[in-house]
Length: 194
Image (cartoon, rainbow, N blue to C red; front, side, top):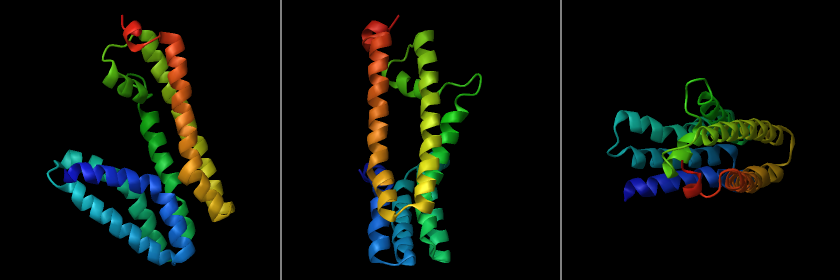
C-alpha cells in the first residue's frame, strides 16, 4: 500500500511540479520553494525505498534526481531559473532513454510497451514501434528546447502553462494519433496477431 502511494505521489509531484514551482515562486522565495521540493522528494524517496532491492531502488529514485538536483542548486544560488530548468533535464533524460533503445540490436522503447499488451509482434509492427520511438525522441528534443526557451526568456506564467498543462495535451494528442495510425495500419490487436 505504501509503495503504491509512493509511486502515485511521485507521478503527481512530477506532473504538478510546474504548478508547485509557480505557486512557490509567486508566494515565497526561491530558497523557500527549493526547501519544500527537497523535503517532498526526500519523503517520497524514503517511502519508495522500503523493501526494494538495490537495482529497483536505483530505478525508483531516478525520477526524483532532477527535482532534488534543481532544488538544491536553486536553494544555494537563489536563482529561480534553475527550478525552471528541471523539465529540460527530465526531457533530456527521457530523450537519452528512448534514443538508447534505437541502437542496432536493441528493442525500441515503444515495442517494449507494445509487448506488454501483445507479446508477439509482426516485423511490420516492430518497425512501426521503432518509428514511433523516433517520433517520441523528436518530441523530447522539441520539448526540451521549448521548455528551456520558456525558462530563460518568457514570463513564469507561460512556462507554467506549457510545462504544467499544454505539454500533457500535446502528449495526449501524440498518443491518440499513434493509436489511430496503428488501428488503420494493423487493425485491432487480435486482428494484427499473426
